[in-house]
Image 1 (spheres, rainbow, N blue to C red):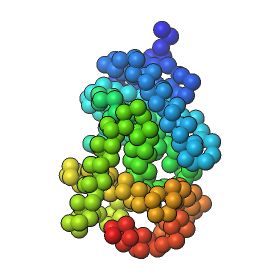
Image 2: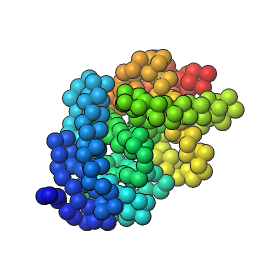
Image 3: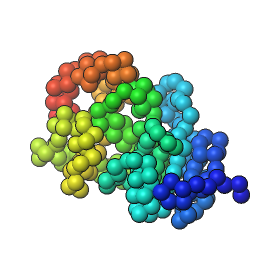
Image 4: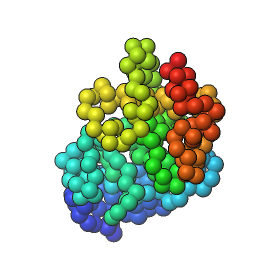
Length: 254
């Protein structure tokens, strides 16, 4: 009872909970809003530990149950969605996490955490423009890391292993993207080949994993803080890892 109701493309209803508002279209079961509230609370607490400082309020979540409704939602929020199953929007009317809620539980939790980490990236970088591989890589990395802490970690390990194997196969066959070609959001969003779409995410994930394992868990966040202070990507990477951009990429491929 007492649901707030409005139209944002599709008809949405929901409540403002202790962490954030969760709103859902008519084809989404209301119980899912409770699950998403809980997952957001856990993700927020864990990411505060990772970042080492308090984070701002958790963004509201808007969920729909099918692709048609998601397309209507993206049109209403003036976002060119393309093939993605969700997006984070920090500006304009009703900023928050927008997502398709038609997946199995592990996939749904992964999407919630992934889009929430985009919010964290924006906070740490103080809203400065972040190269897409760094932004998506962090979202993928913590999507898996926080998933492995859940009661059924094998559901998250499966996709983690697939991502690592796909990036490794591309490295062996010399088919990795140059990192410079993964910096632009326009280039990222306009790739249409399914294999290229998968590889750009998997390569971004493994790049952050490389940073975490070789230079410490704080190194990707240190790069974000440098960007927040006005550094460009080569400067931020050199400060965080001690390597030039060229040496960083070479060692990553090796």
